[in-house]
Amino acid sequence: MKKIAFVAGTSLAALAAMPAPRAVQAAPRADASDPKALIAQIQAAVQEMRETNDTRLNKIEAKIDPLDVAKFDRINSDVSALESSLDDVMKQLAAAKLGGNGVGPTNPEHTEQISAYIRKGVEPTVQAAMSEGTDSAGGYIVPIEWDRTITDKLKQRSPIRENAQVITVGDRGFIRVYNDGVVGSGWVGETAARPETTTPGLSTLQFDLGEIYANPAITQRMLDDAGFDLEQWLTSEVDGEFAIQENIAFISGNGVNKPFGILTYVTGAANAAKHPFGAIATTTVAGAAAITADELLTLVYSMPSEREDNAKFYLNRSTLGALRKLKDGQGNYLWQPSYVAGEPQNLVGYPVVEVSGMPTLATGNVTVLFGNMEKTYLVIDRFGTRVLRDPFTNKPYVHFYTTKRVGGGVQNPEYMKAIKQA
Image (cartoon, rainbow, N blue to C red; front, side, top):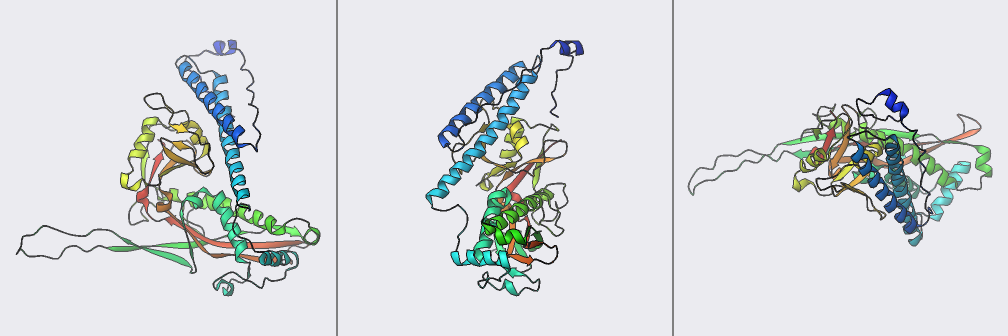
């Protein structure tokens, strides 16, 4: 239930005498397939949202009108939905111009083989590259195009994977060597002695792999009779489950059979001392459930200029909704919407990435990350995706036990900053 705050001192009798709030009617939606109509409606919604917020601010010293609060929340939600619709439409148009669906390469021969494998269990004769098919874990490797399809969809659906550095390894883990950069030097005269100076120290950090799996099932009768694209169905089942689990792990994973989440590396968290370069520095704001414009700017300017290249904000939708209300000293809104596919909305001039798994505005939560995710976080895939067709365990269902080994962790905490609520 949504909470409405009333100004202290308002009596129950006065509240009872207030007229009941009028129902807030949702604005009619534009044609979901017309980019121009969507852009026009986004512009109108943003303007209405800002006017509503200005009205709310003008009234705040006297009282908060529940109708203004409800109206702002409704428009805020509409803006997010319209931006999502616009981005989807523009992606579809771009894919249509390229003559494809925007996902990785396909091969008719491989598609035919995987269809036969799904329907009847006929093992593909063309396997993925490298020698992963001999791994003692058993099972089959489907054609590489199918594996790329899953990986491409995961990248589209997981904002951390999309923005982080992703590497593929053929071993059971990955070790990175770090140089502490401490090199001694000094000024000397022409004939003065040159004593030995300090030598840079080296340290290592190991990134282990966890295993993620999905186990969708379909009846043998449906496999025999299905007139739909079985490959698309299976990859949709798998990438949906993988995207959910990966997103959780990349944000808050504890490293037990899964990646280490980025939030576990902030100051005071479980892995604050794990990296040789230290923890991700945090700025603690004054409010338990709010962030001010000044605090947001403090976060931005805490990042050294040489490390702010490709910096973005990472936060969830509810936090973004609250930050949309913020203004600078001249009354200008800090948030600006986007009207172009591939060009994100921005906050104080920096792109915003919505991450559903980020914590909400509440006491002690790390609610906002700001920095270069590619330089900060490393995602490790062990090539490739495995599928084991199992028609025996749960008759009459055929299960497609699909696994992928994935690791992750912070590779350099110096390129990221965080906001923590008081």
